[in-house]
Image (cartoon, rainbow, N blue to C red):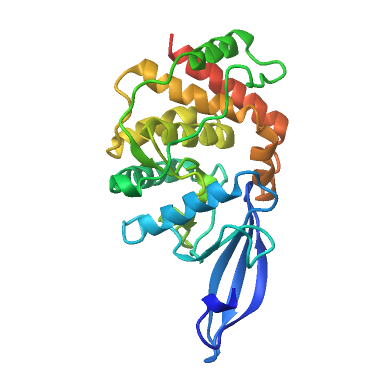
Length: 302
């Protein structure tokens, strides 16, 4: 890594960063000859099956976003084949701010999240620079229905994703946009004067329907703060100028597909939230909220 630092610089401190699921994160404090320091972030994919694909998606995404008005990290170096690092890794600039996951203040944060996602979807890469198409691994046969769930609602939801995916107009997607991947400046003593300082984790960057990104944030908000917030985010996105599928059935398809995808990874999703202080969000509580959210979606569909 030293060859990617300025002359006379060296790493003087490392600190593990918490909250990631797919990769290990470390903040590296780099000291210079003049006594000053700067921070970088090393993102390492340890024993991850699709590390090469994810690193390539992230590398291309952050390069594309440079100067695009989206506060993404800057690329410093990438080691896709673990030639210089023990595992495939990405070295990026460090962004100020922190994730905010608590219930207090969510009403003020949702419009900010919506406006930022609209800005991401407004990025228009040339065809040759577009990221690969989106991937959805969940099928009707892999959905994990929570214990005690509303069986009728879940059966109806599974039937929704048995249908072919709706037609869509392609957009540049983050693909994992949610509060855990958004950094905020929370000024004191006025915590309501929020500002987004960064959007991180671009390993899933894809080309696909805006509805899919919106659905991912809806699901996460529903699990973090209750089903009503999942429903409200889609409205906030449209109010911020975003465009979703015209047909209600098409919107439902993407919303349900993302919600059912989470059914397979409840433990992985809830663990970093508890590590960030939301200790009440046990896997069981998250399952119950997911069940309530799926039931809400299906009730609204008639």
